[in-house]
Image 1 (tube, rainbow over the protein chains, first blue to last red):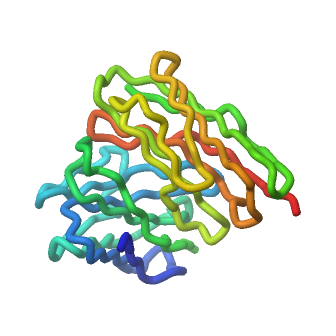
Image 2: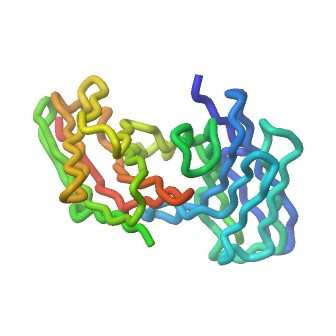
Length: 116
Length: 112
């Protein structure tokens, strides 16, 4: 079973809204990731949560904040977003920490975010 | 820094034919892993195949196989007996130094 679920599938929000994206995996994986993907581009890593440690891509603005309530859930809180933040947001998980032999990442279906 | 290059932005092939997608990479790591991911219009990123750099044997998954040339830093994907469901964007990716780096992708269209 290599299922990663994401909700919602689509989200439209205004620049003053606060919303959250949810990601869940039931594979017992210890690392979870958030990626941002613009149209016709490869995914760009935003955050890694691995073995209770959060790693942040320094280019990600503070209007994005991850939260890991438990080892199977990773939320992405959104606040005061800009239209250029509109993209597909992908969540992934892996069994082991980044860079190890068990770091094959399995992706969820993504959330299509539109910021008006 | 590690890089992944896919030099074919788009490709198309007739159904049932064989197609090869190219990928070259560069890394200073001695231990790394290579992947091909498929992203169909439904947009979910699906793992197609994985290769450990320390293994000389090329990985195979049903109709999908790779040609891994470590000295040349080349990692091509061959799709045999292509099917309409293979239509997708294909990303080559390199895992090294705790980071997964993607190429820019190849859009593959299977023509009926």
